[in-house]
Amino acid sequence: MKRYLVYPFDFDTRAELLRTEIQDSWEEKIKAQWRTNRESLEASLRKELGDHNFDMKLKNVRDCGSAPFSIVSYHNPLYHQARYAFYHGYYYPALLAACALGERMLNHMILDLRDEFSGTEQYRKVARRNSFDNWDVAISTLEAWDIFQADCVTADFRALKRLRHRSVHFSPETYRTLREDALSALQHLASIIRVQFGFDGAARWMLPGTKGNRFIKKDSEADPFLVKYYLPQCPLVSPMFSINFLPQGIGFFDFKDTEDREVSDAEFARLYNERDPTLIAPSKVPPEDNIVWYLRQ
Image 1 (cartoon, rainbow, N blue to C red):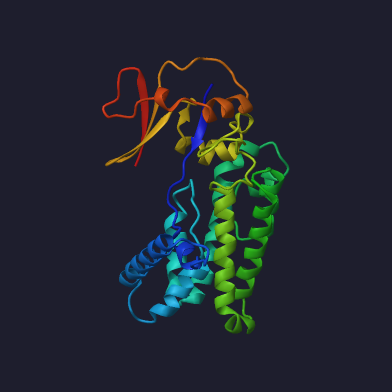
Image 2 (tube, rainbow, N blue to C red):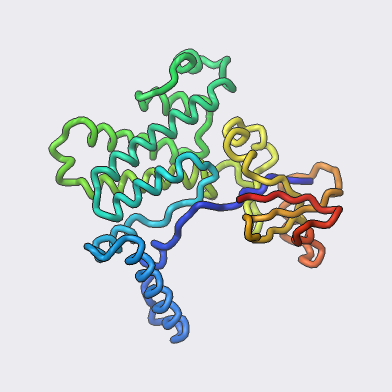
């Protein structure tokens, strides 16, 4: 009767406002609100990034696009550091940082998950090493273990590998395409995070048909990748759960005495979509005796 709820955090969508332009079809009050929001955002970014070369920085923020939601914490600060280097026009550090972080992601996944695949042919190649700098071995191993959530993740890692080799090993072309390569590396990294570690509809774990929230399909709960990275971060909830934004973090509330029976993913989606808002779990703190709650800080 319950499914794991995947709730977004650690993302940055400010670039979307910079990419949006006023449309003639908008009502005047909508246009006025857009101008107010845009001015406020630019003032905030000017304070954050500094006045020097601000027009360049603004363009770089816009071109870099949104930072995707990620369920994993270790790579988030490193990813944001690479983005900030790009914002400031430090394209080579941004390029190398993005490529290095891609390599760290591959290493993390192999080291964190390899014991689950000790009976495979690929395990012998990675069993005794504590780091991996051969991208082809790392990517093919994770492919064979069916770790990647979609084919596009494989393609993005291979594209990042090419950028890494071209930028680290001497190539005169690097000077000419530095900004383009840095932006491309960050975009490939964003795609990997969005699909493999995030909240994207391309991921095979996503329970289809729910409105407003994302849940993990029942048959994906045993996936070694999800067991390692997702399930520890995701509250297990019934269709009648509730959310409250508290001073100390995000609270997830549910009834303790949820009916103990198996339902299909389609039935869970129906129960969630058709629930009566007046009957969902109360979200006040401290919770009532019949309520269980989880806090994510």
